[in-house]
Image (tube, rainbow, N blue to C red; front, side):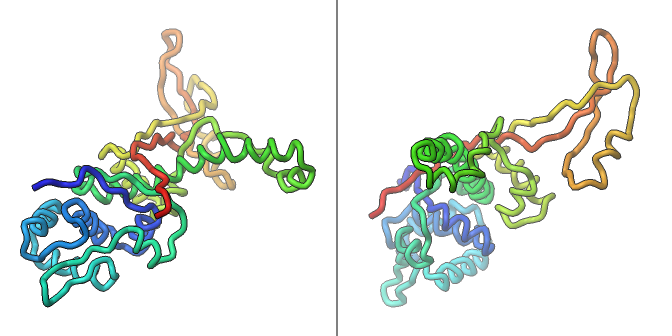
Length: 265
């Protein structure tokens, strides 16, 4: 069986799948894309290969997902010919009135870790958006403001913005992005990293070094609007054990999924 090397899944469709709990259905659609050219017979080797890519043994589970993607209009079955007709991604973008041309490159191996892939894709797209804004769009706006008084007035608040020291997302932001609670957001971010779709780098800000514990420091941050996470760690400095007090910052996130801007058809 010959498979397509990769497919490009529109980021808005990935977001729709996550928001509407349709990740498994989107995984099945992706499997069809890897083996077919637009239509697959229900008794063909291509159809069987697509199902095998999912690693799902239960026939009822497959039938349930097939029915779901038919109801969604992602595929249609001709009862007369026995062929499944697979909707193109451009057709689905029109069906849902999706805007934007960004797509995540999905390789065959990602199908077995599809939940981690789609999570990593949305996180990667967000990080890329931050980089685009601070490295290109904001400087461009500032240059325009320097020669245009009207633009300068509009950019008054933006002129105070500076690029962050690194690019990442807090667990709270990830929970909003992936539509889940904080604890689950942390688990899904780590799962995407373990699967190789993003890279996370721990970040912290040292507050002070103590000779003995002082838990009042942590109390100083509690009961305030600050979401700072204060931690303690024993470190060695000049042959002496000291207690390092630091604020745990959100991770730096490095995208490992290629997000492409596709040309309009």
